[in-house]
Image 1 (tube, rainbow, N blue to C red):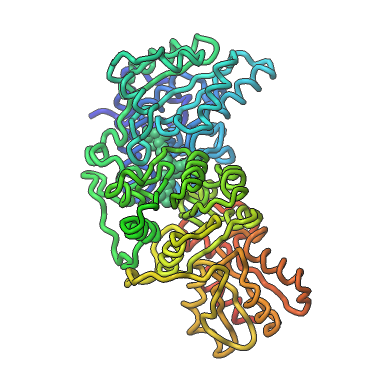
Image 2: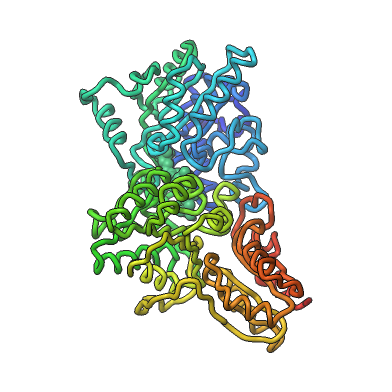
Length: 589
Ligand SMILES: Cc1ncc(C[n+]2csc(CCOP(=O)(O)OP(=O)(O)O)c2C)c(N)n1
Ligand SMILES: CC(=O)[C@@H](O)[C@H](O)COP(=O)(O)O
Ligand SMILES: [Mg+2]
């Protein structure tokens, strides 16, 4: 019986002591190790399985951590983590107080750059390469590993454009598996497909045209070929580009077959790959499905409606419209900036664009929201999914900044539904001829009502509502976190607390707020967003503007720090926003 190699390897230094011919066995063990842990602990599976050989080859050939290796997005870096001194703690991946699911500088010297959002690796690696030169280090290698979906993003193009005009010692490795989370899209994808098929491409190789030394495509699962090519590239100075072909999910048959599902499959049987059914699955739909199905329902009747997603058709559930009305639904790839301005262009021509973007990724398109949409007061509807804490993806992905970053933009109306009925109703309202841009924020995960497919009706812009009434303290909630107060109402003293579902962060319901500030001396705000600049700030501004000096306003919000990873309820608990924490706090008042 062969001895297990992986059990003796904790660092690249130990890896480099192996013989070339031992590496395929190590690859198998590393793959099994990843499968074993992700099967129970969950996480991003397919991408990491696809780069097992590439990960080994890179650490074998290059002198990491002295040579700098950057994983774009970083969801494929599990093998890297395991080989770089984190094998024994890999079982804590994405768990509360465990290691991050993405590379993180604080976590390891081998994580040259923190990632999570895509398409940053080329710019970061180029920055490091230029710095090395300025610092007089001409031997260091700087390597960016970037996927085929991520390289099609604007930011990656900006990096390529700059790098090709330098003599930076930079190696870009395109990990081409023809997949993002969903199948990759776009002309560049078609170009790479043609290159892989050996078809004569119409123009010159576009990478060479950008002044890179191009090599490939090579089989990214062929360790000897990878090592040979990396060794060769190591001795070439200047910007280099290696095109590697891999299979997402490699080594677990079912993951290779259903690459979308196995991007991040949840728990599964490590032998067969079969998904473990979730017990006690909540009956209420996911918010993303309420969005996706409602949009389709509306689009069937309203031919002006279009749907746009930057590379998240499954995650956002725009897939329902893409399947049924493909001529009016668009997956534009990882291109948040483009998605927003595309929507703006469509709105100028009378279309009604629903642009669905995760809160955290909308950060990429900030200028486009201001300059292309709000400034021209175009009726683009932003459906901001994954707002608030998202859980195990952690600090890079929590959608906690959107209220603060959107609230200061003139013309933009900002709505947060309490539940799926309100989400449906605002989506219905949005297509009845609004003349302003509208942002609708809703969270990751399940909604609250089982019976949600009720007829839709109009929502009055800028109007909140009383949910339950008491006499001493007013709680003002925005969004689905208001349900926490509804859930604990039964444990609160009778007639003491009122709950107002404010619905709109902007415009605030000033009539309602005047009533509230005249009646209550204690007012509590609650939001699944940052304490600075968000809903709490909006209420303070209102109080200051109208000189309500006698009321105390107490915030319940996300504190001013980056919140790490863990289950949402664990994170809420940690920052005193769980139902129990809130109840305790309210009972003390
Ligand atoms: C700016 C940004 N938009 C969207 C995402 C969501 N996202 C994570 S991985 C991924 C697909 C990446 O595909 P690719 O780069 O080809 O890597 P692969 O998963 O195929 O290894 C997407 C869209 C993200 N992380 N960052
Ligand atoms: C790595 C990445 O950015 C995505 O895979 C993200 O983790 C998806 O999040 P959801 O699981 O909320 O769709
Ligand atoms: Mg890919």
